[in-house]
Length: 513
Image 1 (cartoon, one colour):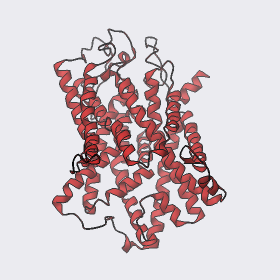
Image 2 (tube, one colour):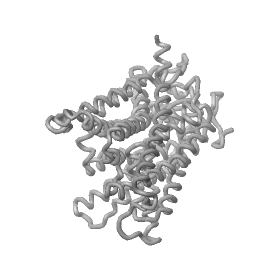
Image 3 (spheres, rainbow, N blue to C red):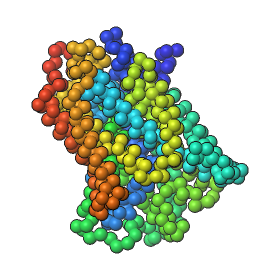
Image 4 (cartoon, rainbow, N blue to C red):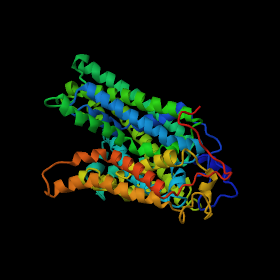
């Protein structure tokens, strides 16, 4: 029975006799088998891109007031940056077979790794609730169309800010996602292998239908209203578009080690990233803008939300197919971006008490407690809550890259990440690397300030200068500063010791074989 549970969980790993139970369980130790190929990684990115949020984000870039070729150039630059950084964060986890919170033990210390794990877990809980709520909105449309009695549930009854129908839809999706997750990574792999392509099929059908109704001559890649910007004025907008692309993927980018650990080779992971990011994202973006553009002649207004587009078609089959498809898409991104990662994060806090499954359910329950529907529509609440947490993603990313590539020189002593021995390589000071903690504090404070202070000054009337655009670059600010600060601290007061001492070393070059 125990063997079946292990195989159905996060993967099959062998806990060695010398591993401390406070640092190891079957879900966190190195995988015995890494079997994901390039298509599985490609499908992961399809599930991540093909969501309502991805659709709206891609469409919004074409409405920034710059020419279509400038938007496409910004998309290419942004997504290539994401691809490059994703390959960087993928390598240590693929080479060692361990998830993100465990590889951080080599940088933050065996206890200190809980700092980035908890930060990342809290971000994921918040967004898990938001994505489930968005999927529930899609399910509501299906109920309202096919079950007339559900109108009363949507209007006459509510609890804690959500209608009775909203609670029903949220509960259905909450249970469905938990069921997929509970069946383990193999079931999740099969789900995302299906979900991404399925959304593509419906998106292509939707685009063909709307274009046939509008006529190809009515389709424009420029969704902007008003006068276009001149070349010099467009440069800051292009830079913002690049930053938006990178920021949109910053969460999955940081989390990617949780999936790269399953890759059968680093070469396969890189190929999956190439197909799933530049190729997939550009095609999806073009498909999105063509579909959105067609809504203007067909419906008389620009609609950038695919759920509302399907709703406006107003045929039972279209609403059923479209609604279920976008529910599937949102569930897909929710599981890969906001369910699996906190499962590893919370399990890492107390592996002997919290399994991967238990960690995931902590995140799922937490998402309900946060009541995301009450603050998701409040831009100020999102800015001051998720804005603060999100601003810490860049520093965590920069410190990981600096620690693995610049300081450790791609060397990881795997067994040392599972020992509480004060003489262990990753014990540092009482289990914490003070350099990593200082780097998070310094770079995190600056990154958070770039998000919070400009808006605070503007909202309070302290200044009439709108510098809130600075928040678009918080990831870059935090990432760059985290990398530089941690590298300098390790130079001045080294904590990471590269002496081999006969211990197994896992290393290699970025090019792989």
